[in-house]
Length: 116
Length: 113
Image (cartoon, rainbow over all chains, first blue to last red; front, side):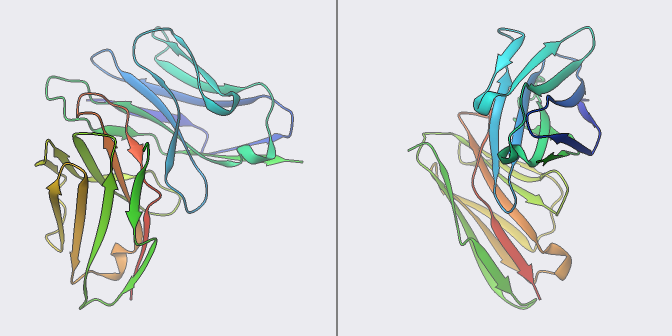
């Protein structure tokens, strides 16, 4: 069975500081991994995805994530936080087992607060 | 067209009402999904349609009834809901169930009185 753990339900950074949101996964098969962002009262927007190509993945809005198989991690980073980055962030792993159900398994989410 | 649209944006209904949520995509995607999301929680999968056939029902109560009239449309029919069903209902689509990457609509905010 696959699972995702996001370490830290709430992260607070100052504007211009490094953003680091942590995600660890468990999967018995090579996973697809995703980071989504959700602004208040909106749907989820895909930030970036790992699909077994390059381990360092660049996404939108200056975010990137590195797939580390040895650490089963897929942490999200951004060098310099903007006020507009304040939102809820979800890490997700895709069910790529033999059933190919397409289920996305989400972490519990991390709320990013950016202080001026 | 690279988006998933959902109507209505907001819906308030009584426990005896019947209403429907609508989702549409024109990206040629062959898998579509309904999720329920409570505040400060991740989305919970309700249903998956794959090639217009219901492939997953996550033990959802029968007061929620999905329908996929064609490959672009997905409906969720609501009847005799409970106040605890109040939530944000999200629709998503993907190229196929095996592709992993899902595109989400903006959601319908449902309030059950």
